[in-house]
Image (cartoon, rainbow, N blue to C red; front, top):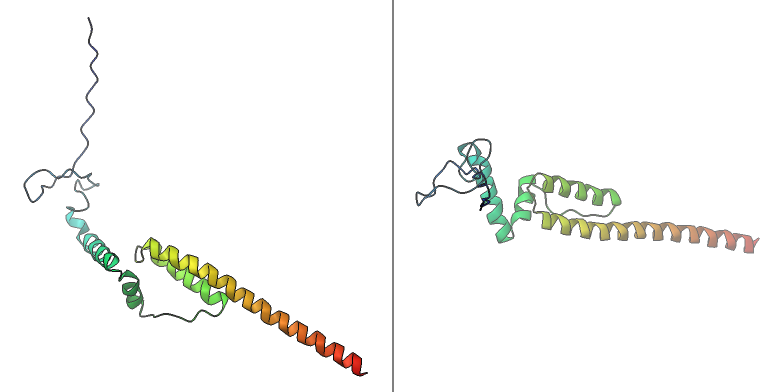
Amino acid sequence: MKTHTKPKPEPKPICKAKTRHGTPCRMKPGASGYCFAHDPERDAARTSARRRGGLRRAGLLARAVLSEDEAGPVELRTPDEVRGLLAATIRHAQTGRLDCRIAATVGSLAGVLLRAVEQGELETRLAAIEAALAQGQAQRGAA
């Protein structure tokens, strides 16, 4: 009677480093053979990620991004200003300086604001047209 044995899968590569308890780190390694947490060449990226994580938990990440840009809240009165805010938000989200959830909220609110600003501009233009028509009718009636 033949027994079919399954071939053992190849062991997955693991990080070359040891944990603080002396056991091998079981995280997936990068090209250097170390995981993100242990790679000596990625120390600056690790520090930045820890900082962003702490700020995100404390709800201060958006303020930190604003202080790095030395910008504060801006008045958004025109469609171009709203588009500028959206462009900056996208740029910060792409570079990891702004949490995607905050960026999504800004994007949603900016979309609502953009529609309101555009509607306000249309209402102003319509009022000017109606005033011009009323003035033209009043001049014809007086003649």
